[in-house]
Length: 106
Image (cartoon, rainbow, N blue to C red; front, side, top):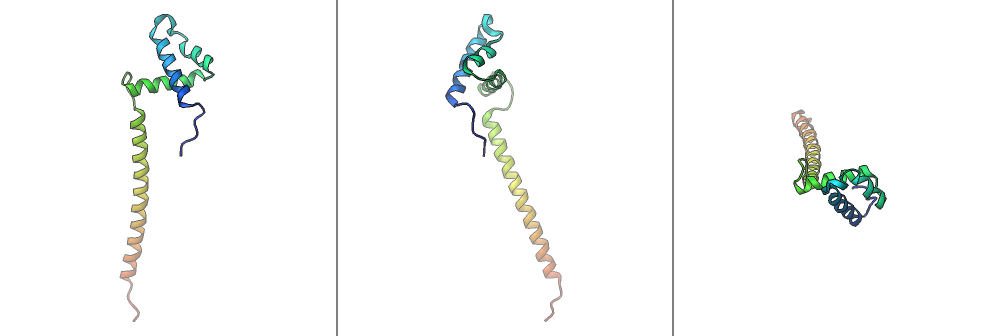
């Protein structure tokens, strides 16, 4: 289960919009993330990460999208569970094979 988010989604979306708008204008580009972060009480590095991920999700920047990352995590969990199940089945198979190889005492 994911940890609870420190910032509400509305604040996050607003901060991203503000930062992207300020970064479009060359006059306000420098220090835009720091100014928006200070105005909204968000760490500039956190805001930078949000903006970078938003740009990746929109296709403006190369990288793994949020949806792809979630799907990858889901598939990795499934692979772990399947490997665990296979290990259990192999152990059970070996146990029952050993039982069949024992001579019966009847």
